[in-house]
Image 1 (cartoon, chains in turn blue, cyan):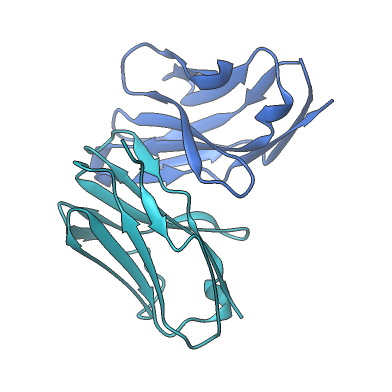
Image 2: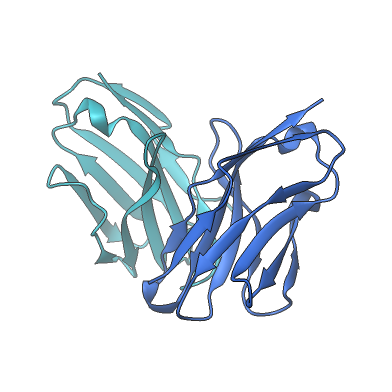
Length: 114
Length: 113
């Protein structure tokens, strides 16, 4: 079975400082991994995805994530936080015997202080 | 290209009433998903379809919930009778193939009083 664990339910950073949102996954197959972002009262938007190509994946708004098979991790980073980055972030795994469905982490709420 | 379209965006209904949520997936997508989001449980997959056929409905809470996909461009999620604990945001999503990016609608915000 596949699963995903987001290690922090809430992260707070100051504007202009780096962002690190941690995610570990479990999968018996080569997974597809995603990060989605949800702003307050909005739907979910894809930030980036990993599908067995380059292990460092670049997404929108300056975010990137690195797939580390040995650590079963897919952490999301950004060099410099912006106020508009404040949102809920979801790490997601898909593939293998799960058919087309996604398995979501519990989410990490990112707060950005001025 | 239009994204996933959901209606209604907001609905407030009384307990016991029937609720129907609607979804139009992205044209050409073979997979359609219904998710529910609450503060307590986060995002839960309720059911998903492949080529209009329900594949996995193990997430449907109980018999009060039903979902249909009569054709490739339309799906409904029905709750009958509704209860206050059904209050949540219901998301419809679609994707082209398994493992590929899933695109979400803006959600239907349901409040049952």
